[in-house]
Length: 315
Image 1 (tube, helix red, strand yellow):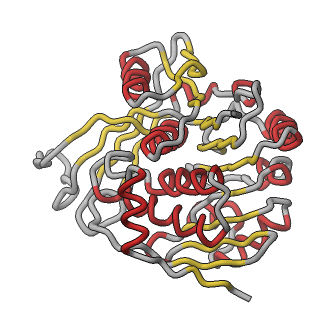
Image 2 (cartoon, helix red, strand yellow):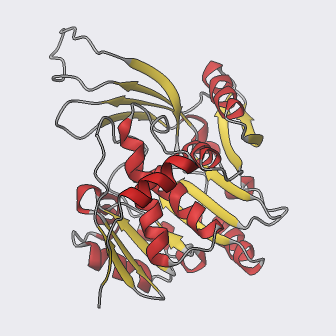
């Protein structure tokens, strides 16, 4: 059986439980919990897939430091194949400080670390994967579009389905990084804020139309509490949001991606894939950190059966 590959950024996350307010200069405030956890798109998606009963290979770079040892250990503890994780000498592992404030969106402080050295040629290609997920594109400065495009093209030609997710740290010319790549992508998964930074458009319909014009087969725009828009070759779909107890939104996009990959792996229809991905994405926010709250397969099946999410076709 062909493997599933989850490639891209690997991060050590420092996460706070929700604070009453941000501290003023010189102020000390108390958090109920401060956790050092696994993070980054590739690590999160790999962990979530394994929890859902879908084995995969995680590919990325870490530094030769204690945080690199930690991320490897946490992934290995989950039972994930870490043989394709590269240690970058004399480099720190990427880290993110995630500050949660009650009633507000999260705040992030990030260091690129070893992720800045991840290259397109680091992506495992033998044997050809059934599904190739690349997460954190646009945040990895050494993963260049003209190097990545032929690798994705080859993967598609060998029967792989390509799923691409991005991180946009600041305003920049992202179009030039995406134009060579999107014709060889089957599913593109930006959220609406990332898509606005890329396209300059606030309307998710306009965002998706631009990505489709650039060549992607399916543009899937996640919109937080406004749900998800899927615009693809076979149709256009809209989904609401599964309501769960909210604690921390970190990693919900990666959980959505894992749910989508599960659905693709099991050859589900597009509406059912959107329903499954939405449910897995929603489950992530139930606990502190990027993966702790994500459903296992039994929990997912039970939740979907008890909470049917309407998927609406759009003309």
